[in-house]
Length: 98
Image (tube, rainbow, N blue to C red):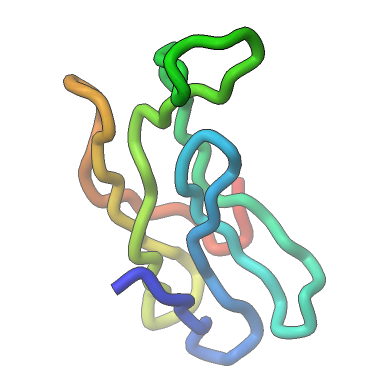
């Protein structure tokens, strides 16, 4: 399940989007305004396509499954490692970012 998650009061949606290196968590208002990235996972140095110049690199980890706290102040999400030794687990961030 990696679907959008609505804030308890309906004022925003948390979702996962690929940023060019991996999946990150974002929040946005229902009208499409105020998009803000909430996670900041780093890229590895390993190229996606085998090493041509300017190639995108693989993600170290990917974010998934954002869920709002009952009071709407925080968003929790899973982080899955993509390369050996990368961080993983469940993280919680302020819903407004920061």
